Length: 140
Image (cartoon, rainbow, N blue to C red; front, side):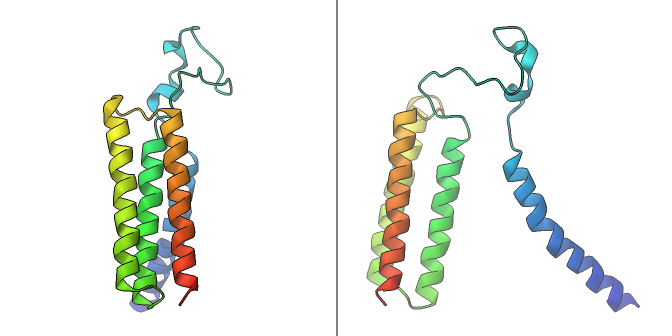
């Protein structure tokens, strides 16, 4: 009986955790987004577009860092599976570190806001890194 209850609880946790994480990622936001009374117009509707100031939305730096973390995990998994060589790992991790430093520098320069042009450039570099990982893994 105890073993069955433990297995059921463990199964519930294993099923609920990814679902809760996906739900939280889709519905993340800042308090500023939900504070309509503090807006310049005195209460905009939630579906109205935000004013553009030439900056990417606040969560974009986090998105870039999360993508890089995923790329790092892919690099290590491909290395463990012997799909890429140690020299390719060094090269890919060096490129990843350069993108991470650039993102942190650009965000620090503007008070943790990432300019839209810098965000677009960084995402292009992250996409390039993804393609390079795919190419390196496919060669072996």
